[in-house]
Image 1 (cartoon, rainbow, N blue to C red):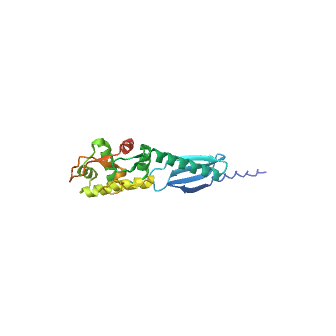
Image 2 (cartoon, rainbow, N blue to C red):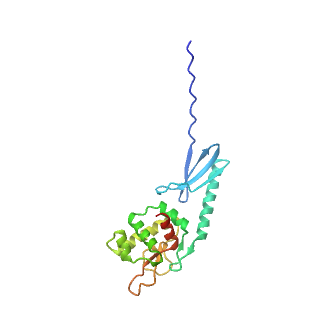
Image 3 (cartoon, rainbow, N blue to C red):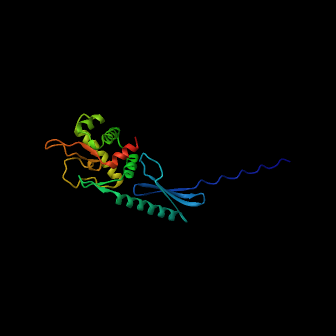
Length: 206
């Protein structure tokens, strides 16, 4: 008599993953290796996909709550570490914040070219003409607008007010990136100089 074929064991269902949001992060939670885990990732369409933070709990809800607390504590620490720029009154993020923002916001090739050139120039800075040339813009106005756009993207990601509290003719967003040198004279704008923290962040990614 032929033996009956033993039924193959049914594969265990894949663990279900719940997706949510907290601030600018995407939260994924579920049961993993016998415990409830919640993890924070950059929210799409961010370029980076690495995990930002992780927490565990007795239940999925507890894990998510613990993760929210960890994220909030992280954000509060960062805010407390920001200095105020003497030139504009704008809060200046730490190198850590700039690195994360640059990795996740959609900066264009010309914007990155300008930030890279300015980071290399250091405290000497660059004139508007040189910045425009590096990025391939035909006018200084276009370069300034694009540079301001980079500042607005970073400010939005980091939830920082980008408007200067000091009188300025420069577009909103530029004060989060840097400041003008004092050698511009009455009718000429000074050179653009990146904040030291942003210079270090850009160099870290080179």
